[in-house]
Length: 195
View 1 (tube, rainbow, N blue to C red):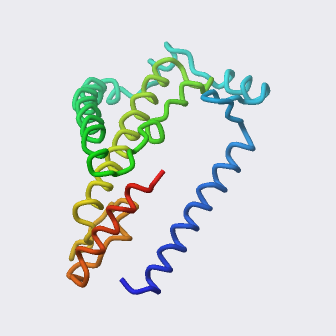
View 2 (cartoon, rainbow, N blue to C red; view 1 turned 120 degrees about the vertical axis):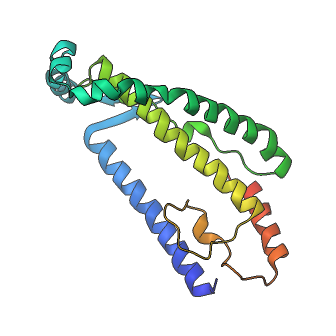
């Protein structure tokens, strides 16, 4: 990868971080503040949320029947998700220290805060908790696998692929064999220095 492309990628990454921070600051300053693990809304917003809450029986009658029918299939995925969580966490706990790769903080990816929204009824909060776990787990697993890929094989594919992780753009170009071992070692050392 030439220096110009590397510089542009670094700029893109910095801009994405700035944008993420700015959006988060705008969202949080407008509606809520975070106190430890608790999200606090202004009293007027909490009252408005409570007025919007749909009662369980009204929700059940108005709910889409296809969602109720497929619910058991959706929730059966908790078993493979939990097994995946267990194995990836065990893998990271045992192998990352050996490779000297900084561990991925699970809590940065799996966040349960939607149950604090007053406008959701109990069933909606359960749905949100399940989805937060599932999507957060996949993001957590993606980062663990991305660090593993960066450690063992930080090489881009010859073909364009969809859904690459954030580390992929820094990988070595396909077929660029010059100083491969030295550059691989540089990736490995860098992985141990991450926060």
